[in-house]
Image (tube, helix red, strand yellow):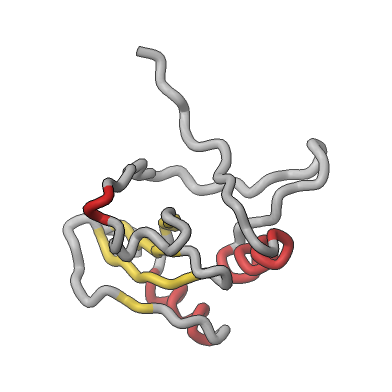
Length: 124
């Protein structure tokens, strides 16, 4: 079977796309979509990506915001990222448990979408 090579984009509805793009750029370094094909786009570091549809029994999962989706960003140092976000006035909840695959924290973007931060085991 021929497989896809990775995720080439993540597209979602936003009430204020420009504001939300700036927020992700300011706090996570995810650059806004370019205005032309000549401009560079955000390039992520190589690493694992989980693709996980959730059934109705997981409707209240912290991984899904009220919009019905959530995004997980890999980070090299969870403590540094959490400090940076809290310093900017963003509420972040760090999971006290350390899992076999790493550590996690949850927050919401300005439109209430679920954002999870993941520091994979062995990355810091």
